[in-house]
Length: 399
Image (cartoon, rainbow, N blue to C red; front, side, top):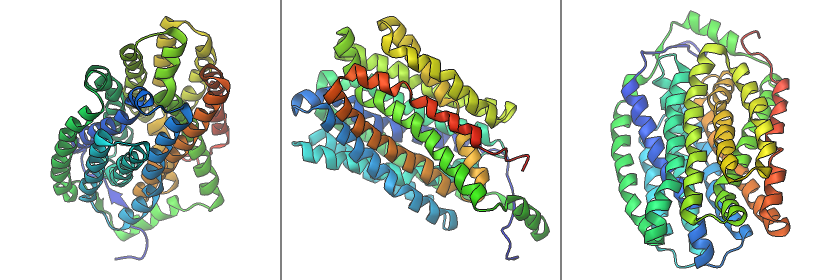
């Protein structure tokens, strides 16, 4: 075998594996989304302020972020498809802990357990989704993402109809979803060898290696910009997953169930945006999708804090639909910057940006306590403007 990095020939897209990965992503992120979905319940039960609510988000998202780059770096060299099962096991333990926690400290530990499971799941699942793409990478990431976004949207819906009426301990019933995900992961892991791309000849590998080689500065700076872009989106989303229900209840005097339904509509639009952005990115190019997500969402985020209840619902759907469209584009751009490092890229973009979003949630909670939740949302309206840094991203294909 040549010392050069071998190029690969993708197999045909393994749609059964992609669908199974999407379903496991749905179940994983659905369990995660139950954490912010129970905030209105535990805020009253434990007499919490917004800052403490933000700290729960921080505990969950920091544990979900710290290990992901390390896990991704390791699995790029030593694939571990069965590690996803271990991750879901950690999520299961954290979920049961949330259901039966008797103090605020135990809530923090349980939320961190769910985040730990996520940090193990995402890098390996991202790598396997790319292997199963058959070269249609935007579509594959879109299918994978639509599962996660749909799962994230289901949390408020389940909270409205199950957790709010039945209470905190009803979270324990969702351990069934974790067990189902573990069974699917066993099947996916057994298919890992079937979807691993085939190797090309060493001569072709040399050509691919030469195309992939770039000066370090041409990789590090764009990579940092992509992380900042995704952070701006995650921070804006964190303001909704953590505080949107309180904003609606405080400003429009709606019920907890109504606020959860509106949060569901906001999050469900992410699934449509992620899949649509992945498909369009394959057709019209990632750069155009990036700019659409930035320039398209900003006017609506600026209007949102001043809208009535009806237009608040409409605007939040439009905003998240547009913002979510760029996720696959950002991920694939990063994978081209670091070819052969899919797990590492997944670790950074599911992990680091997720953790930064948790820090943002904690800061926003303190801001809401001091200046009011409406003022906090008026400040958040400018977060998508950070996306203008995309102007400095190079065109990789021309390079």
